[in-house]
Length: 304
Image (tube, rainbow, N blue to C red):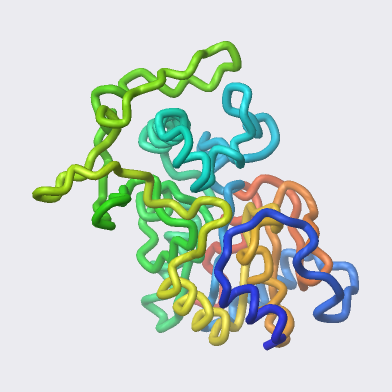
């Protein structure tokens, strides 16, 4: 394992950049787009790691932080997802996340989510394993039926108290009365400016502290326990799929290249090439909901 990679992953700092990792990790021949060749590799794999990004959930209607959803009202989405923004304007940040929570709560898993979950269940019966390492903060992988999911950026469906640190699953809609019908993303919508004491509050006895979404804001350190589990999967997998991710948010952007650096086949599924495409064995371009079901379908060698 390259020391540079280990250092950035060990730091666990969520940042968006195209310049953290430079230089080839392997022979940068053009990635293969032959599905039949991928299927041969897939049929022999015993431990499969599937790294998913916002593109998978975008096909379910959950907005990403880029493209047409790069802005919420007049602010950059990425600028609202920071500890500094939450400290300065908790009402605005809660409106932003309330909007995203409500969308996620009302969306269904995409064809890609379902294909991953079906593959995991099928291969488990054969003594093979599938783990999902996801950057998505929605709950769509679990809704689809995936069991082994590592959520490196946290969950929109959980809250954490800024006072006592208590974390709890929270799928209430709306999450509090003051946020009902708030969070519209249009540029001409004014901030609700909700008083802090009316924002989501901790339910632990004698606390009543301010709650925040239990997600990893940009600039925050990821959960070291989750990162340890991710590293274990990266060290043991014999096939990796990188699905629906722009590969510019670190440290997740280096997971695929790091796995490729030890000679493991890595296949990228995305609507476009990414800064990391050149490191991978395979690249399949198009909607994940179209390419992934074919890639993960039962192979003839599996039998009935």
